Structure formats: C-alpha cells, structure tokens
Image (cartoon, rainbow, N blue to C red; front, side, top):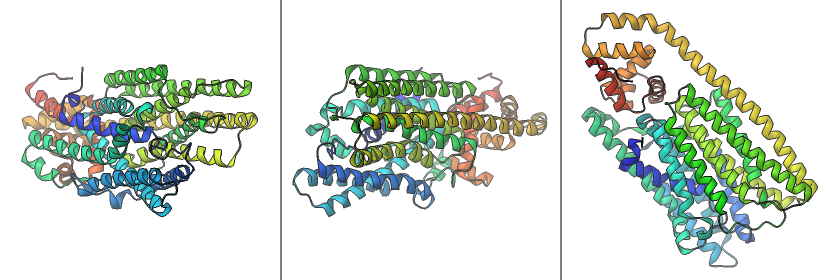
Length: 511
C-alpha cells in the first residue's frame, strides 16, 4: 500500500527538498564538482577549510540549538540561509575557475559562509522531518525520504558533475532546498487547519521549530547514537580510503553494477519501511537486522581491501563508494527510528551522527594524505587499526542499543501497570460518549494517564502547541507522548487517532 503522503503535494515537497539536501551530503559538499580538490592545489586547501568550518559548525549548532532555532514557519531566516549557501558556493566556483591565483580572502569568506549556512539548513531539515513523523508516521516519512535519496543519485551523477547542467543544479541546491522547506511547512500547517479547524489554525500560526530536548541525557539510547557516530566515521574512513591509496583518480562515471546494487538496497529499505509497525518490537528487530547486514557488507569490503593491499593487486574503489553510500542511508534509517521513539534532539542526532562523520572522515583523509606517505605496510596498519575499532564500537553499539530499548519498554510497562486501576475506574464511571470511547482506547492499548490526556486532545483535533498549553507541559514532551501513543496503537497520524476514538464511541472495532 502506497502511503498517502506520497500522493500529496507535501510528499513531493519532501522528496524534492530532501533529494537536494542528500545530494550535498552524499557528495561531501561537492569536493570534486566545485573544488576539484584532487587536481587543484588551491581547491584542495579551500576544501579543507570548508570541511574544518563544517566540522566546527556541526558540533556548535547542536550545542547552540536553543538560542537560534526558534524559527517560525515561512521565516525569512530559512530563505536567507538557502540564498547565502547558493551565493557563497557560486562565489567559490567563480574564484576557483576564473583566475589561476584567486583572491584568497574572498575565497575563505565564501567558504565560511557556505559551510555555516549549509549546516544550518541541514539542522532545520532534521527538525522538520521529526515534526512530519508525528503527523504522518515514521514509515511514510521514511519512504518519502528514501525516494528522495534515490532521486538525489539521478539528479547529478558523476558523469555530469562538471557539465553546465550539473554546475547549475549544484549551485542552486541550497536555495532550492530552503524553498521546499518553506513550502513543506506551509503545506503542513494548511492541511492541519483544514483538518482540525480554526482552533488549530490559531495555535499553528505561532508554532515554532524548537529542539526536542535541551541536551543529550546520559542514557543507553543516547550512548548508542554516540557509538553509531563512531561506526559511521570509521566506515567512512574505509569508504574514502581510495584517496590515500596509490594512483588515486577521481571517479568520473558510475559503475553500472554498484549503481544498480545501490538502488536495490534502497528498494529493500522501502519494503522494510512498508512493513514497519510504528516502532513495535518487530520494527526494532528489523532495524537491527538491516544494520547488521550493512555491517557485514562493510567487513566484506574491508577484507577485500586488506587482501588487495597485502598481495598488491587491484581493487575496485567503486565498492568503497557504494559502501559509504549505503552506510549513510542505513544510519539515516536508524537515526529516524531512535529520534522518533525517544526524547533525543533531532538536531543533535542528525548533525552529530550523520553530518559530522561524513565531513570529519573526508577531512581526516585529506590530512592523512597530505602529511603521511602510504606504502603497503602503512596501508595494512591503517586498515588493521580501523578494523579493530570497527569491531569494538560495533559491540558497544549493540550493547547500548539493546539496553536502551529494554529500559525504554520496561519503563513504559511499569508506568502502564501503575495506572491500570485508575484507567479501569475511569472506564466504569464515564458517562460522556467521547470520554467513554477514549477510556476504552486507553484501556485497550494500556496507555498511561498522561498519554490518555494527550490522546484525548488529539482526538478533538488540537495542535501540539494547544495541547502543551492545556496540559502545562512543553511541546517536546507532547511530541514524546504522541510518539508513544503511535507506537502502542500502531497508528501513524492524528487523523487515524481521531478515527480510532470515533469508532470506539460508535462500537466499531478498528485495529
């Protein structure tokens, strides 16, 4: 069954916008397409400066998310970030290609502006994706994003990155992604107003994009995200190892078999998302299976590389390119799940576990190739140390992730049991039809008292901000309760909650 989101304007805004965002992430922010760092000395140091700026920004933005991410829907700040990103990238293109000795001060300024604005846009997209999950459900949003990711590989393939078409798309990607981000927000709130009435309209007009939590709490799920960050970084080190190997030449065309394998993986992930049951136990197992399969592929590529270096044979670096592409997608898949079901900040999770490993690994490879001469012995040592660290952080990831999930469900079970008597009393004493229907749903799905309160307001069509005002809790806490409600009921949107309570009141058996 095709998710309803894909047939709406909002779904296409998400697909096109996320395709442009992912294209920049996948191409490591255009190291070859714009800076030609493998053949241009000036481009190399400018690209290194860009990566340093982005590493700093991807760490600073999560730390400073509270002061600057109070961005209203349609705010000019979003369009400004997109315009600055595209203009700064265009300036880099002109300075690097119109002169053999470019203005270095101007180039550094353009690089800094591009790096910071691109990181800000990425963070804003992370927040918007999480908000969409609460409206449409994780499977629908994941499928739309996967379609966008597939589209990103077709927009500007390696063979077209230096063409006039490729250069225009690359330069305009930041600005266009900000346009789609604004259209996506406006479409979202317009649909909410039509569905939930004037009360939702009044509250949604002042809704702000806010971080989910003030910081990472030290808990197993947060630690599992930290381990996932290290795993992603190490796998990217392997994926970019062609740059430090002998005879590196930038890939000019896509390998047909690896390109087909990439789309096969995306198709498998789409099928997996269709089968997800809103983060039930089966959904968590499915995510672990997918992640385990990608790690096994990583070790296959690792041993192939190690064997090729040891016996001094040729190795297809198209496989390493395929590896880093798959890992980015799988990490995104995992992060979307963890952020949705927990109280982790989407900005922290996506910036630190998805954006940072990509640029940090690329910067590390550039520094290693600049200051170290890699012969066979050095490469074997490099691969051996990387492989050992991969095994170490993989074990830690599974330990923290499993402990975090067990603790998460155990905590909810304890809360549910402690509220069971109160819920049964409410079921027996309610006379209002709406409250009686709600009490039946609460009893059936074993919701806690606070989840019952939130579900009651959701069933009346209240927006997240309005619920937070009624219950005197933060919007972030409301979102966390909504995520728990979706998971327990197996539903994916507010409209389905409304229908569930309505059907319970009329005696229909839904779900």
